[in-house]
Structures are given as structure tokens and as C-alpha cells.
Image 1 (spheres, rainbow, N blue to C red):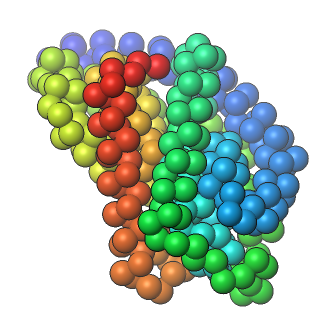
Image 2 (cartoon, rainbow, N blue to C red):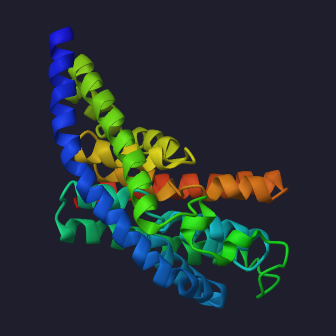
Length: 291
């Protein structure tokens, strides 16, 4: 058993060390792009009006650390509608895109997954607007919103140093997550077998999507790392993967619960996000969609 563990650790370290340069490069480029697009994307979503879910889902798809947090602040200030907020949450990619790029997943596959999340975010956002109405009281940012709303995601997430240093720290943190999670997955697979894990997630209708969505609700980057790695390892299929990533809104929900004093409203938003993500995952799984 000890020899097997040593072999697993050696294999994972050998593989994961190759990922770090790609993660670092990806986060560096993301930092540069975010500096150029952050203010513009937030202005778009603030002034979107009744087409908020369109811009919300498109802007949310960009891997910006603080965008879901920004959407939560705007919603609390009644700048955004409920539908727009959900569209941002569902399309938020968190750590998914950097991991897929680092694992050298084909560009068409990455584009298809992102496009699916954007489409789902838009449709769900508009459905929520129709069902729950337009919860918009203002079109200006309230003066008591935290200052980080007007800054880049680096500052909003506590990163106030240079882009290169931030990229290195972010890449290192995600690399550690990937390494530990991959190690755990390999140990579990060696212990209970791939078939058993696939049975839990893929061969049991709805249950796989529900479990993946519960994991996705964890309010940090670890949730999207877990879901993405399980998908890349072939343990979960399209349905559970989508459910887990649709509900994974980064720190958005954490900010919502922190800033919005209406606990009942927060619980309803979480429930809507969770149930919607599970239903979309079940639908894609039933249709046999493969990315």
C-alpha cells in the first residue's frame, strides 16, 4: 500500500509540475485583460436595464475574481435585478478556464463549455425576471457600497501588488489545490474503483447532479477546482460537471450573505441557483450532450 501511495504521489507531482507554468501564464494574461476590461464590463451590466441577463452572463463568463462579488454588491444596492444576478452567478467560470487551459483541453471544448454556461445564464436570468419581476429600485451605485466596487478584481480580492506577483500567488494557490485534489481522487479511485465512483455520479439519475451542485456551493475556488478535475479525470459526466460549475459563483454568495441583511431572501436566491443548476445538469445529461 505504501509503495502504491509513493507511485501515485510521484505520478501526480510529475504531472502537476508541468501545469504550473501554464497556470502562471494564464493568470498573468487574465490580470492584464482584467485591468483593461473591468470598469467597462461593470458599466455595461449597471446600465443594461431589461437586457441585464444578456450582459450579466457574458461579463460573468470572463474569469474575473471579483465579478460575482461585484454583482452581489450591486444587487444589494438594487442596481441589478434578481435575474441579472443569477445570470452572473451561473456564467461565472471561477477557476475552470485556467485549469482547462493548463490541462491543454482543446479550445473548441473550452469554448463549448463557456458558451453553454453563458446561454444557460441568459435563459435562466430571463425566466427569473418573468417569474419574479424586476427588482430594480435604482440605476446608480449607492454611495455606501464598498470602494472595491470601482477597482480591479485584484484589489477587490485583496491583491494590491503587481500583476506578475499576483499571478504567481494565484497560480501557486490553485496549483496546490489541483495537486491535493488530484491526489485525493487517485487514492479514492484506487480504493473503491472508477466504476463505483462513476456509478455514484453518472449512472444514478439526478443524484450525481445534486452532489456536484452541493460541492459547487462551497464559496471558494476549491469548488470549481474539484468539479473540473473530476470531469477531466472522467469520473463525472457533462450533467454533474455543469451542475457543479453553474452553481459555483466564487465568493458571490459569500458576499451576498455578508452584505444583505435579509436572510430569507439570501436563502431563496441560493435555492434558486441550486435547483436551477441541478435541473440544467439533468437536462444536458438526459440529452446525452458531450463537450
